[in-house]
Image (tube, rainbow, N blue to C red; front, side, top):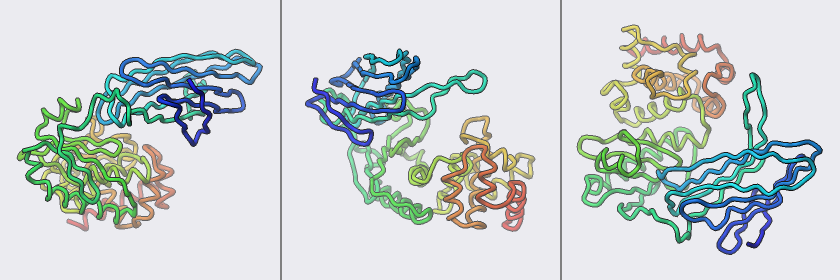
Length: 374
């Protein structure tokens, strides 16, 4: 094995395997790190680590073997004791059950810290590298050969031969591209990479292939949906998630609220699959509130996710959309972009700082606006 040095911002390859060296903090130095000759099944990882201090240290290694696409990931963590003023070789294993050309291994080193109540946390890794191990690897055992592919301006669309999607592919591509352009214009983002859209002819086919239950999902740069005579999902919702992901990962009220708002703005039946088909978000909020179904703004802002039963999705989806509509119309898109980038779940103070008013005052103005729109 040939050892190759690299910095934390570059990666060099050595023959058919990967090697890396030198990541240093005030207390430790990773002298060598080797992820081995990556193949299916179990793989060996090793590193030589030096403790520079006069005290014993605890080190955590996190290995995430990601085969790419929807294939099952394998993540493992290992804990090591480093004795004072010395080097030690550490060994670990990671595993690829399957491998696509997009497979990668993510290697991270942490120092654990004991927080309040004796809870151990990891914080931010001091070493974080992603090794692309699938491209050109002879062990790749999964590809997309079962799909046909159609490239539009902004999407790489994968679909099954002789399916309804194959018949409708030109219309699907035009519709998705239009949504992409409009959403980029709305939130003022740019993206050159095509979004990958996978269309399955049935929920059963999708579940068999991906293991995911339901009509649609999105992850990374991928949208996976069922497309047939019975099921045609809102063509804009997931695109909005992927594009706004460039701005941040905010509270679900802002994230899901914007996706539904954008779909409604672009003419889709945005609540068709979300509990209020045929209704606008504002109409759904007014109707449910008249029956006593209402989530106060501060609680809505506290949700880390909207969709699971505890979030009351039939109420929270239209409310989040309606709130976003109000915020964009009243305060403008620039402030919404700032909120999207800075307001996490439950962070009422950050929300109020962006909009310059207490949450209760914003809630009253929002509800008042609903009355005027009836």
